[in-house]
Image (cartoon, rainbow, N blue to C red):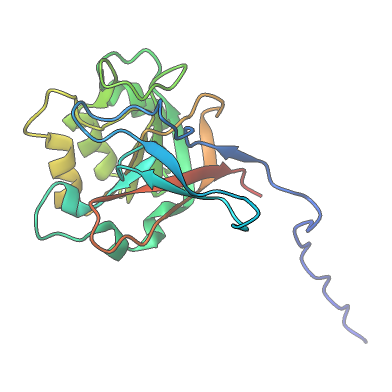
Length: 223
């Protein structure tokens, strides 16, 4: 008797385009930076004309402008610059957790509802409309970051300028990131993303001596 030939597993539909969400703020002269830091600026260096075939601009850009990834070098001398950081942490399954109206700090109670079978990357939405302002924003309580770290995450992101409060000189969350070897994304825009799981893609510039890198971060729906 001839055995039936097993049917091959169904392949994903190659014609179906997965939805993406751009979670990076626009960068221009209105982009907020830490008080006293260098603001973004841009000028034309070469201008298109009969004698010049192209427009080329010259920009001044702090690597922490807009959506960005901090390097370990940012919080400890002698640590890795952003160009030497492994890209793997910035790619792969992630979960957006809503912590709306959490106040000045995201506490463990604000994230407890979304920790079941947590993927390696976690993005925290703290505001209904993301702001890069350093005047008032939500940071992460050390207890909350410690809880996330206990779930074996590799990256945490937030829709505010910093995981630590602006007045903090001790910077406990950044110190914990360094101790646990975790990566961080700051200044994301998560206004339109429902709470849930996605694929994160946030590639860094290969800046070999820099303490951070701007990123064009996106979320893509899971197949």
